[in-house]
Length: 344
Image 1 (cartoon, rainbow, N blue to C red):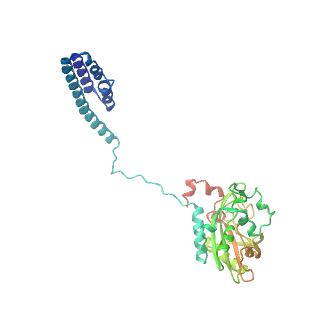
Image 2: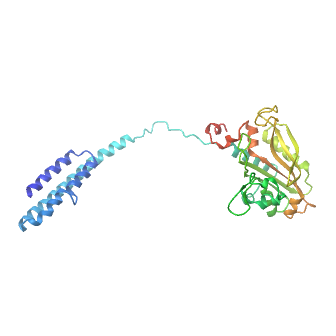
Image 3: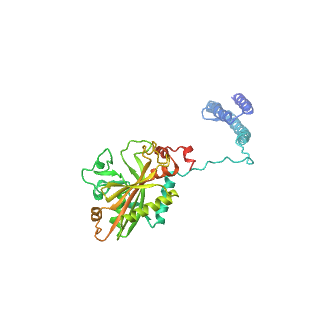
């Protein structure tokens, strides 16, 4: 049995000497020193020996195990050092090389347009509305009824409005005009606010329309406010926004929450008024609707129309951005194409 132990020792030492990797070392440990290893199998047979032989062979078996453990530890340190050196060499970084540049992101033109419009109106004395007064998820009551929409108005139809399943008559707002009602409920005149935000409508997506888009609502309530004040504010905004005199026109229109009402068109920048697909051949693009706040709306929010009057307007951010930057397809704002965004 002592001879067997010597053979095991010599065989293990030879394998340790030729080991090349950490995996080889682990294999040798498993084969010789584990519970099911060769050395442990010899120790199990010590019970068959005499008491004197047990002492001799047992001591030698322990000595063999100690020798192997020491040799394995020494070889493991050598192999680890070589493997570490090889890994460090493969991962070496030349700090003298020029660093890789990281492409900077770009602000979406819709965001920059909203910021610019807000800044212009703040310069004209308007304040930014509180977020809680301009929610995107709204009740049909605030979005329509309080704004003087009749019960059978077609805008309430499922084809135009997204109805949520949270509760009966909960919708995704179809206009930022809901901010008018909430602001007039929470504040007393004089009121002069703007409310930017997203709105949702069941529209067929095209170069000119999307089912999600952005509006900026404006509201001014005070004494002795006239349609002339509205026209002056909007003309001044257009002059500042475009940086030049742009041909505009006010067209008579109808909105349930304003009376009288008007739509404001700006000459199409893509065709110079000659007609193209963006302006549907008319030479004009509608950018906003406006009018004097309807008497019924003022009464709904307990503001006395005998004392106060005011105007409201809502403008499409996408339309204004398209006009300013000569963008001929509204879908480009939502595609996140870096080639498009880099231009801004």
